[in-house]
Amino acid sequence: MSSEPCARVMALPEAEIRIFVDADACPVKDEIYRVAGRYGLHVFVVANSMMMVPSSPLIERVVVAAGADVADDWIAERAADGDIVVTADIPLAARCVPRGAAVLSPKGKLFDADSIGMTLAMRDLMDGLRSTGDITTYTPAFSRADRSAFLSALDNAVIRVRRAQAMARLKRMPPP
Image (cartoon, rainbow, N blue to C red; front, side, top):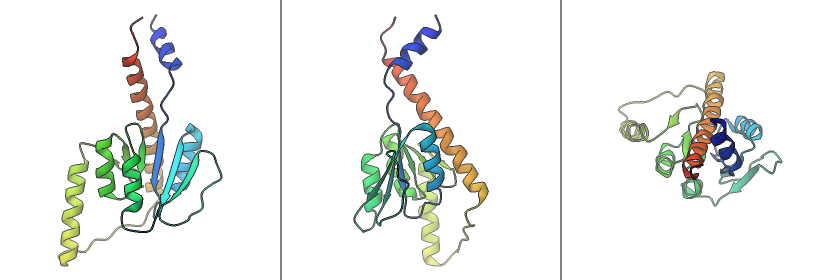
């Protein structure tokens, strides 16, 4: 009897998980392609210049017009509940989180409703301090540990989104 609801959930169509990549300076594109291929996910590689992407029906290159925040606008307008966004741009993350997207930094940090406000405030504070010359910061180079943390976080995000989608389908089903 307990396997019956699971069988009914599996029979319902699964919503497609899409990955949006803020690609201009993204160091983990190859990792995203690998994970997307493993799970059969559609990837939108968004940039304001032409860039090479693997030839795959799952990977779509989107070249937007040059200009500040044009790629960010394209992603923010389309990201929705059940999507994954990969960006190091905190203002873009702050636009996508309320839309229900799971947002990851290239170092594997998850931006969610609980963390994005503080993260955005810290970014603005540090930006202000840097502009006045009060502080300078050093950003360490992207490391193998960062790449590994990202891969783990992306796998976890896909699993979380799929689990949430399955639970939502289960709740929509009529009782047996």
